[in-house]
Picture 1 (cartoon, helix red, strand yellow):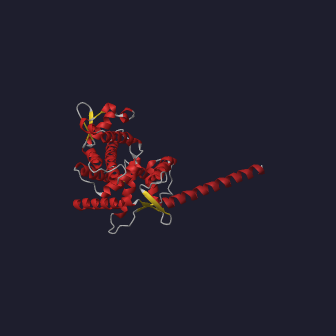
Picture 2 (cartoon, rainbow, N blue to C red; picture 1 turned 90 degrees about the vertical axis):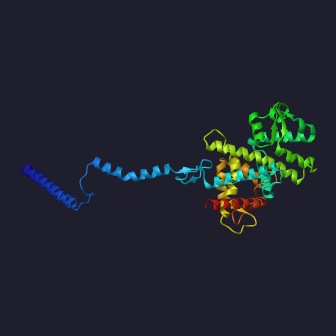
Picture 3 (tube, rainbow, N blue to C red; picture 1 turned 60 degrees about the horizontal axis):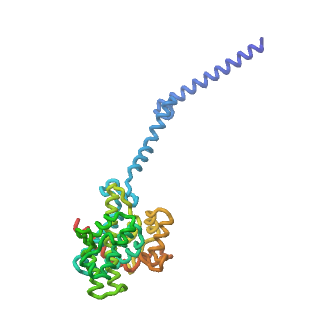
Length: 354
């Protein structure tokens, strides 16, 4: 009996203790609920989940903003999302260079005038870099063959060359009609109704160097004019590819050509506000490496690098030295005047707009 009573007393003590604790808890909760502390009020599990979701919303908004950042359609660099132009400033300057150099060379030769020295030197170096670029080889081979035929056969300049007789056209993988149309539009060749090729205005100027002025194949004039004509069709083809690529057509983005001009554009941007120019223009290694990322894999980058420096053939083309202390690449001196001319032309355009 005593044992049962003691158990009952213990139960009552425990029960009253629990009730006292519950009472204190209620008072504690009421106290903080009156103070308006939202984190102390009683909430259900579902309410707590909904609160957590509401706190995460700003993060989702941040991700959506990142998703709407725009990238340059040509190189992938970040651009202003409010800009109406789909390419970055560096690519804009690159396309400006391509158009300016092409028009300068073409207009001079078409008017029987020698192109400016700065344009000839730049064209010579650019064609050296792109001499074995697959996209241009077919055009280069056709131009080389017709020039040779016109030189060794005087009558070919008057009577024309049979298109079907051109070896370079027989063994090319590219569209033959496309090649001939491109060369005809640029004034490199004329096409007769009976499908024969006559020298166009551009080629006539080149042939006159040999026929009229008697320059040989190793003369500076011959080298410069040959490079100029090659540069004209290379730059024109590049322009057309870029236009088609930006329009969404299935044309190849000629990244190696674009990279040459993007390197030059970086140098132009760095010197736009300067009044005194360096003796030799240079580009920081970090900028150089960043621009080369456009080429993709290491193998393509290495091939491009050893080509423009001359490591592969001992002939410097775009870069002539690397300054280890300053961590920068020195550009070939033949681009000095070219860069200055491009800076001046950009400034002229900016003044006209303002």
